[in-house]
Image (cartoon, rainbow, N blue to C red):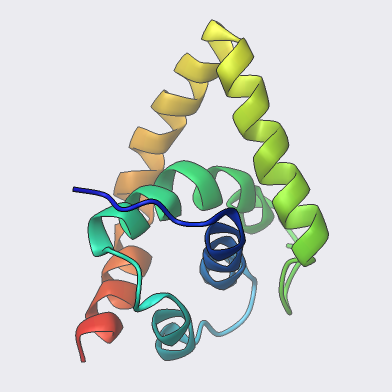
Length: 120
């Protein structure tokens, strides 16, 4: 059963997990240390359904603009905006769900690296 994260804790998790989508070496140990108190099942959902859909376009760019880390305020505002759009549009929600399926396959290595570091 998922426990409820405070909005602040969820935003902190977003910020930590977003580091998996920068154009630089990824420190999985640091990410795992920042989110190790969150239930892994809930964290996986946050990673693939909230953070990845917003952050992955950075890595799909020919020259990714974000290489040192996402701006916290823009990250939070962007994810919240995405969530609102998905809540109010059936088409946007369906598109989001299809994109999440793609992300679960394409970014499983990153997720497993974080998860592995959480258990070490």
